[in-house]
Image (cartoon, rainbow, N blue to C red; front, side, top):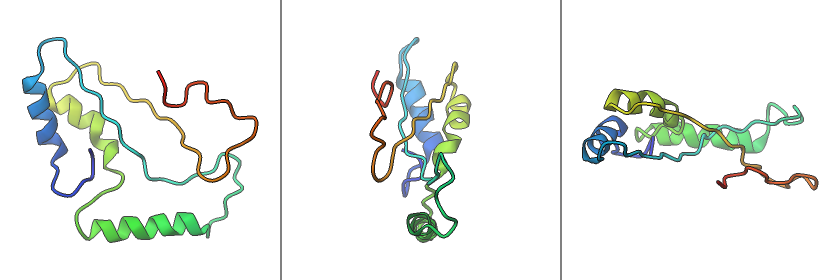
Length: 108
């Protein structure tokens, strides 16, 4: 939802808040477009990381912020929502570790 061209997240959340019945809730799901490495094996000049930097710059020309999801909690509170929470899950890129078991990876 966040960062899309022509979408005002604050206004959208305010409209959603007004239309929900008391006790209702909303769930937002967004990607955090940042490439990191848990074991520090990624080099500073990693081509995928450089590619993402260039994509962010290009989209910024059109007013798209790939990190706008960071504003979701604040926008949700400003719209009137309470008990706002945030949960981040890692999404592996490339080869997945052999021993990795997706115990809580995106499921409920």
